[in-house]
Image 1 (cartoon, helix red, strand yellow):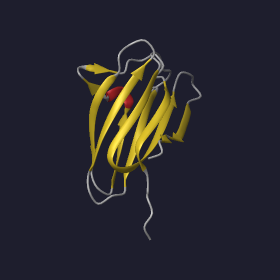
Image 2 (image 1 turned 90 degrees about the vertical axis):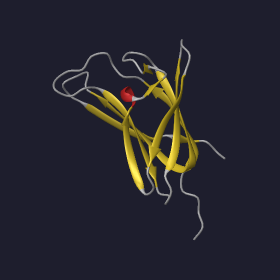
Image 3 (image 1 turned 30 degrees about the vertical axis):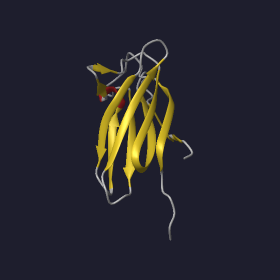
Image 4 (image 1 turned 90 degrees about the horizontal axis):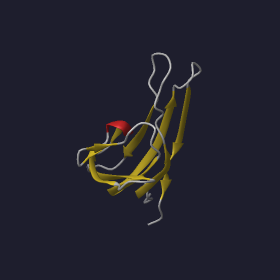
Length: 124
């Protein structure tokens, strides 16, 4: 069977990490990259903002037949990070087809919420 699994370009248009959290959990967001290929996937993340220049070319290596979970507040490029309370969006590019999932932990209230969704795969 010869089928394509994944995409080489993914988009996550709605990112936002709240300024404050309640209780012991911290609000955060994460991307999960699944690499089903034998070879390592060389990925590059770009962070877009409403009112500032993007953070370009954040390199993330995902080993072959592995998964990598990355908190978005830990992504760093050119000495910059995603700040809490600032809307953002992500573009992930890869040299190999991968699968990308996005998760959000909202701990702004005592009743925590976890949301997860597949990122948008761009057509090749």
